[in-house]
Length: 80
Image (cartoon, rainbow, N blue to C red; front, top):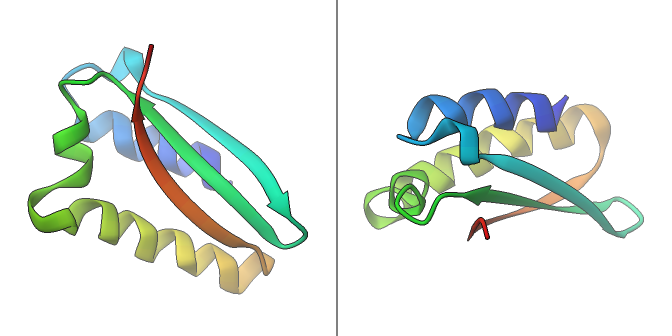
């Protein structure tokens, strides 16, 4: 659910949607790390001015915590 949402939402924000990929890895019981891979030109768009865009993404993801009980950490990295 989280992965599908992030994939569709982040593709709307960037200039190179074909370069977007999402990786979710289990760090601990009840804690997952989400890494958004994007074209290096689009990382600034995903982070936004003063981090506002990534913070809003994190806010929406925290709503998923209420439903599933899993904590999430969100990172944005350049795809290779």
